[in-house]
Image 1 (tube, rainbow, N blue to C red):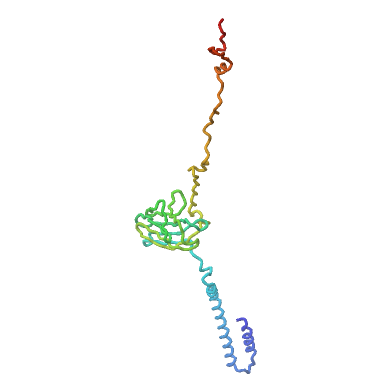
Image 2: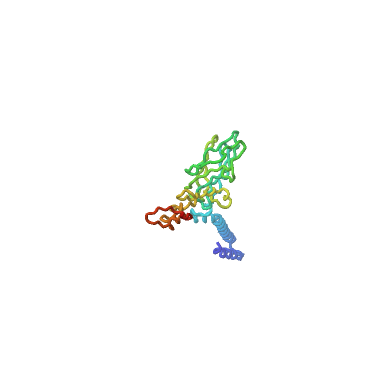
Amino acid sequence: MVRHGRPRVERIKALGNLNADQNPQNVQGELSAVSRSLRRGAVAAVIAVAIAPVLAACSAGSSAATLQVKPNSAATSLNNGQLKLNGVAIVADRNGNAPASVVASIANNEQQAENLVSVTVGTTAATLTGQTAIATGDALNLGNPGPKATTAIVPTLDQPAGAVIPITFVFANAGSVTLDAQIQTGTGQYALYAPAAPTPTPAVTPSGLPGGLPTGSAAPTGSAAPTGSAAPTSSASAAAHTSKKPGATHTASPSASPSL
């Protein structure tokens, strides 16, 4: 556009400097041709500016950043909007590994109480714990932390964090509904919703006691007195000092003196 602009301007100037004796019709025709050329150039410039973003997105292919944008949480409703599910997500641990917790806010605007029967993530059934009944005009905050929380935990995940997988909720009265939700890591705003890490089981020793006593050694049960040696008694000592004459009988008595 810029490359051809100067010659057209010069042509207009040249036409403006025509002598009076030149044919006016020729001058008017030349001006009309230049004007049409300028209009076509302006329209082409506007079209080029308008389609530039579209061409850029096409050239980026399937990996364009705008094509990777996905909602952080999903929502749906049943029974003509009387039962609403908002903020649906699957929250794994901080590394994106299972087990994972299903998070959802379920509002019951029906004319009767509702009950959450089951939750399935992909093809894996979640384990429901806590209160699953939803009174009329009340809401169930599935996956919220707390001592009386209602949770739906899946032991495994078929997809990594960031993937979108289907979740099916089954209710006693409204029936079932399936929607796609994204797997989130248990960090940032989802840190409170990540399932608790399993408690490690203490190691058990062969003796059956934690840190049990070593086997194969026994404490001494007692010491035996040495045999073959006995303490001398008083009678034995007296006998040792008594001499016996041949042919005579004598009773040892250290304190007795023979009678005259």
